[in-house]
Length: 209
Ligand SMILES: Nc1nc2c(ncn2[C@@H]2O[C@H](COP(=O)(O)OP(=O)(O)OP(=O)(O)O)[C@@H](O)[C@H]2O)c(=O)[nH]1
Ligand SMILES: [Mg+2]
Image: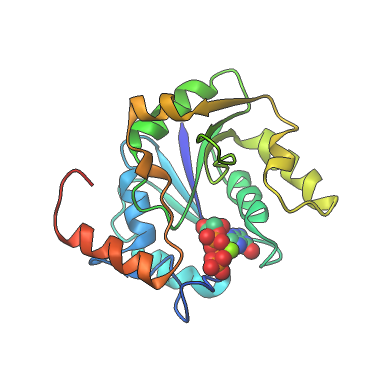
């Protein structure tokens, strides 16, 4: 049993007035695009969002081929680490991939490889050259990471690497990622401009995307 946890509890302030998670990206809500990319590599989906997003998220996942649960943080606006914790607590699988709602190009080949690499460890986290860990595009042993997030949050930590560093984690480097898929898997859309550009590309029907 493999779970995908999509975190969507942010306020999309760089995007503007609307919620970017459920915003229409070339005909499909962005969060549904993320879910659709993962259909072949997981057995269930957990979405973490706020109460006011629930109806739109539910609608976005109408007809999704796997069970979908929607879970809210006990306290909203505590940052992505809180969302990861809430999502992982709701996962039935031993391992879960955590993906941000704004990564519509997430590559199933890369995610499948992260699931392979995490075996016998607590986390498999990509790291690009000269960049920080891609903690919102990583596979975790659900219980271990949720426990570590509990502790980190109790101590007032905000950075997701704080709980990560308490775990037995494997770093997956850029060349290993490239062998299994596209680096575009990490692209996240924050502004309206980035969103519109991606929408144009997706609408063009280029099947390399
Ligand atoms: N549960 C939860 N998730 C969050 C929170 N803040 C951000 N996220 C999620 O973490 C991921 C990455 O966050 P950002 O790209 O900064 O998204 P955002 O915070 O909605 O957007 P900005 O307001 O523009 O920073 C997204 O999937 C967000 O939905 C939060 O306070 N709680
Ligand atoms: Mg943010």
